[in-house]
Image (cartoon, rainbow, N blue to C red; front, side, top):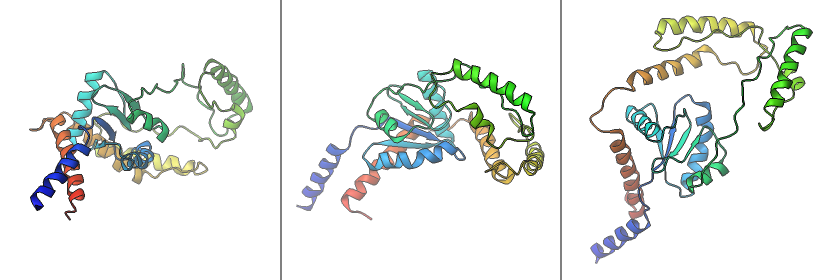
Amino acid sequence: MAKKKDKEVLKEVKQETPKESTLYYFYSVGCGYCKKADPIVDELIADGHDILKLDLAEADNRGLKDEISKKYNKQCGTPWFIDAENGNQVCGYREKDVLEKWVNGEDIPAPPRPKSPPPKMPLHGATKKEENAWKKEYEKWAKENEHLPKIQDADELLKRPRPKSDPPRPPMGDFTDEQLDKWGEDYDKWSEENDHLPNLQKSSAIIPRMKQQRDMRKQQNKSTNISPDTEARFQRIEQKLDKLIKHLGVK
């Protein structure tokens, strides 16, 4: 009798379990917009939407992301939401109402983009003549890009704190720890000179993330015994087994 009940429960779970989800959420450690997106994704999962969260710190997930990017000819950093079955995507952070449309299969148009980058703001301590010249250029740019939502007023932008000089450029490509540490020293010096700016991060908080991203890039082309797609399927099976175990009351 007990066996019959177990079979009935398994049958019910199988019927209730939808087909394997192809809704992928790619995220990376240190990504500010991913941190904003995480609770929204968790809410959607709690609402019953089957979304697979894929950390790009893992080589298999990076490989899967590359495969999907090539398959649909799409490029995006993180956060990246994509249906691997049809290529329907949301690139970048969006609010919950937009992501709900995505999980329900609606096409999400890309947000409007500027026709050109805005002119660089004058530095702290710039002359009135320099500020007026920038303001004229900015207002021309704003008119050319009036299709963009929430374009800010030039005078309001000039009221904000501005740096006294440009920050030092971080090393690019396959940089060494020594190069990055030297940049950290220059950055901390620049931060001290610009302590009037709010929310400046210390180099000690930035450098570990940059090293991690560099190491992730180095590992990106390493081969694995299991294909990225197979690894993603294993993760999906593990999630379904967890659901089944919880349903059966096994601890």
